[in-house]
Length: 546
Image (cartoon, rainbow, N blue to C red; front, side, top):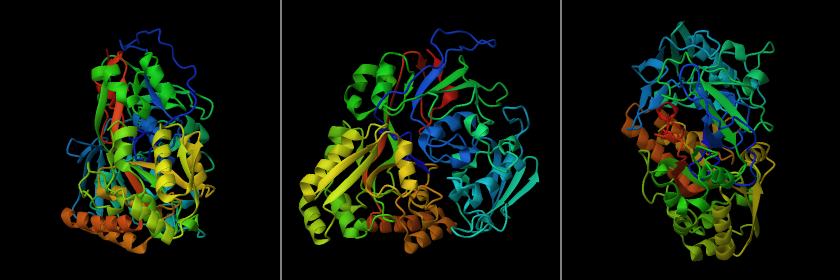
């Protein structure tokens, strides 16, 4: 459920950035050496402002997720074949895809020194699932038996604070019983929502404290140096946690996330060596990035999708699918990919990205550019004469949104008004509050490598209000097909069912796929061995100071 900010994939989905710089203070570049021999000059990376406080249970976008991925160790990571491999987990086993046994590795401690236990995971997941806590990632726990008891739905009161499907067997063993078999459950467990929280995160009132959200205690590679005051601070400062049992960076100990409201400003800082890693290069810089950075520029395949979102639940003007089809047919994806993005995007022709099994070339026939048919359909369907097209200005989206706007003006004969939101969190908040009723830019970066992840979190009925279904799309046939795919014990059969659900999206077009991302990032001369993982997060332990 990672909606993306940036024009890279973003940062992710899921889910691009622009505007004015907000990069103040932070650590100096004077250098230094830690007591243990590591360089204390921080490695500095660009991010946009996180939408929420840094609580894994409530973070569903790429900026906050990037920070949390440095602080926490997931239960699983993903190998080069996109398969889950144990990280904080020693083993994750099942015989029927319904009852799963998670054994934790010993040696992990919270960054306050206390041991991490299976009870921490159970407590965290119960808290995240509980409707009364209103966590943004609660839908990810919906497959666990007893979720309906803690999250019965709008207007209803939970009858329990714990899901019966979670059983703490011993300090390092958690048994998870799902409401129905789900073959992708192990694959899901690399997602942010499944990070554990320590008991100290919960205050006397039973809620995660603001202090914890500002300075979360994790069990991963980095420990926060001080609280991060969202909206005020322009850096998030961290230090390698000395008791982390995994691989640590070889010759450095400090990490700094620098918060920008302009991707272009971050790019200028990268060129000036005032920033070390920029993982969402703005479109205006991509054409020259190779010559500027040489081997320090990377253009790599990415599993994200860029969309034009449709507020189906909140604006009846777009109810007719023929209107949405006409809008899709009016968009010249090939020119946008080749011209605006200098060939670093590919025209989208499915809701599933080609990087993940399940993609079918040309599945979305309405994603083909056909201006004449677009205008005819739009006029017959009596589409709105004026459309607002919202986008976040802190992610490099202005150019391609303007290109889409020009396509719609020229090919549909309507007024199109692009509307910039200063920050990514602004457009998400406006959608959450049902205050914005125009079309909107959206991106999706996978939470885990499965075709299902392009379906349930963004378009499932259960993800309205508790997931990333910002458009409010709801289709029972779609939900039922995804559920059948979830329960299929044979992977091939499950994938066929997911593709059938994808066919419904292609027909309904609740969002309009525009392009498939590629990951375009660059780094300074001060670091080397910079790589991104499958979730487009930096592999910090591999980086060395140059």
